[in-house]
Length: 368
Image (tube, rainbow, N blue to C red; front, side):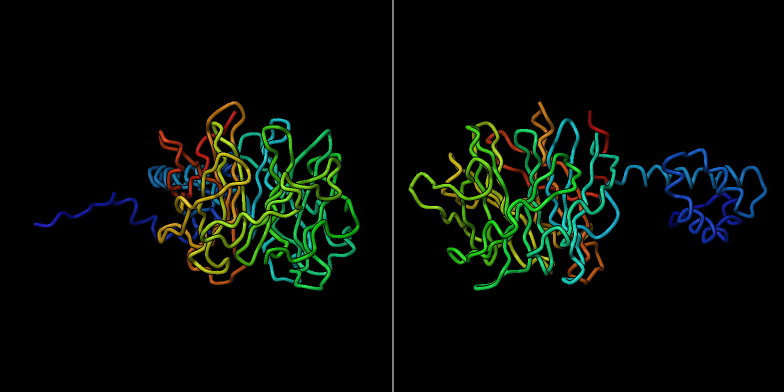
């Protein structure tokens, strides 16, 4: 005889109220997360008078609230993509693209957290009103600090040959801005080695030298900054641009060092499609060569699609790493409907990056 699940009889009288409970949760969830004792308020809004029934509803709500607290992905509300994560003064920061239609993508917000779990929004740290030459969309920021100044780079105008646009650079006295256009013009505007000047990432090498990887259209260039970040400086070979494009590269470069190894990462596939993904290479210097190792982040039919354009955060004074990336929720077909998520990134004993498992939980416990 097949097993039969027997529910407590009191629950049959509560199921008629589940829709009410759902609406109550929708209205009160933010408050519940901040103060779970508000559960009793929700219970009183449900037309149930039996004490045992109230206990069941409280249990249901408590489980739902606990799940909401544990679910950290996306890490903040809204459509945000291309997130760059960094640590400033013991605070975690994420600088994403405001993911909207081209004509609406005209500003940047930033988000800060002391523990990678609770986030504060810093709206409109820079917009096209500050960048006179940016008359189209702005996206894909890169950030760094040096000698008490905070620098914020971005792509603007989806530039093509002969047009005004490309990579801009701005500066502020604070990580939350406001940021001011440093040059009044693009830092890089020309199409060099077939690379559209977008998706820049600024990398500080172990010797203090600042390099920048950038490029769309399937090509990636490496350049070097001068001392005040107002222009490029010659590379060791005397040139100003070195192409470092690995196999499969499309856009979104990122670089970090771990145990003396240079990890170069990038996005593959189409950014509006489900197959957007992240791959990586290892090298002994920032110049490569970068031989593709593997894909380490990609779509999961149970979680999300279009996972890519990432950055990496190393928890200070530890060997713990997190990948900060965007993905598209299941069922979303709008290319701009992307959310920012964080999941742990681990290595094997040989230093290879292990495939990242996308989760809804994200950072499951506040970090010190």
